[in-house]
Image (cartoon, rainbow, N blue to C red; front, side, top):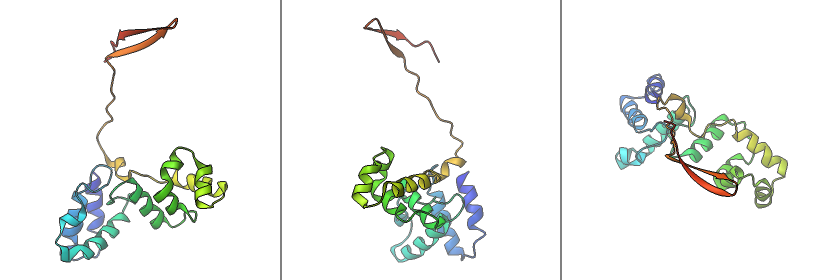
Length: 167
């Protein structure tokens, strides 16, 4: 599992017993995508928040890079930060213009950021090699497919409903 994989890496770190326990708390708080189920700040006392952030930062660097994050945007930003070989404005585009990037609005991003179209496309090319859901490679859950009960077909301008016999 993702948790087992991360725990084994955690125990290779030169951490105190207290830090190891905090790391385990963080790791067991991750869903199948590698994201926090519960806000990490709720897992420890207020006096331990800075230590928590330090341990969280260590875990984010484990394989797969970008786990122990809040969502896919934070995961991508962590990966960009750790890998360090991204085009200059990658973080800004992920943080502010990812939706436009996904919709192919490169010209609009170019206008809003002042970047050339080539720069925007270079960022897109880089982002394609990142994994927004790094924990999924460890998930054993099989995808479930929805099979419709009815099928609408159009013949000669008229619509017909048929019962789907497929299971």
